[in-house]
Length: 357
Image (tube, rainbow, N blue to C red):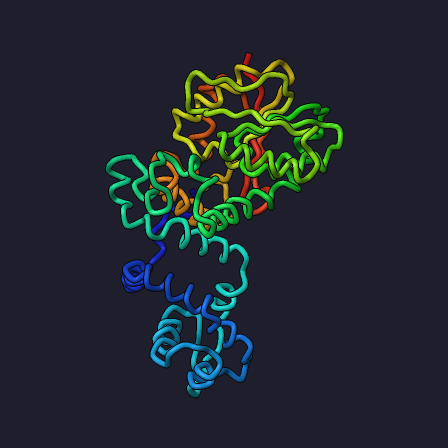
């Protein structure tokens, strides 16, 4: 919260930032085109000597007009500088071209969200993900559609999801397995990456993956291809159905980047399902990214904006939460926090809970 308690801009600066917001879609598409069409790469290869428009034209099958408008836009955006008619890459241009996080975020915004965000205000007023129809029809949430999304959309969705969770796994595995663990329940298994990491880390444990049928089938196929069908099983479940129950007999329940996919009321219901099958000594681990727990303002910004994806595309009623909201849900579900560790991986917090008997 320390990042957001003062107005930092002068009036002139604020007006300048307002223009950047007004033209933000143009800035985004021009930056992506400069990256994807190879223009930034050519300019980088030219190094300190720089490169002229004519030299770029010789190497790319684009029109002079197309290259020129992109180069001039790149100057205003700050991706490029020009000296003696020669273009050079800036630090900002370098990160647009090479930074893995920027690439994952940009592709996610473009392939999964961009077209659907035309309907964003409708989502706010109705509480429904009206933008979802841009990538999936006849579905209430993106999770029901994951297994059948268009290939490019699916690729960018999973790249975005895995980029952040995968970076945290190496830090949380020792924390989860520091006490004796025999069987793990992975709730919201996705493609089964966590189950795979668990079996690699501890050769003696078994994992039950819980997810919607379509996505669970994908995860089970991944386990089969890794020769893990004897250690990893599946449990198909729609957790939003009040009549469903989770399986019993697990000493660890794992929820990674999962609860942010649901509204507060739904989170409480899901956590109650977990509490109902927990015995004394069982532990629930929640791995989440909370915008108020970030070291850097830019990380908080990214999470706050990611919330809008949930509003418009995913389900219409969830977000990247403030930690206090999640804590309240945990308490309402009859669970107690016994340990919480921030700043794991890129931006995660690991919360360990037990049943509050």
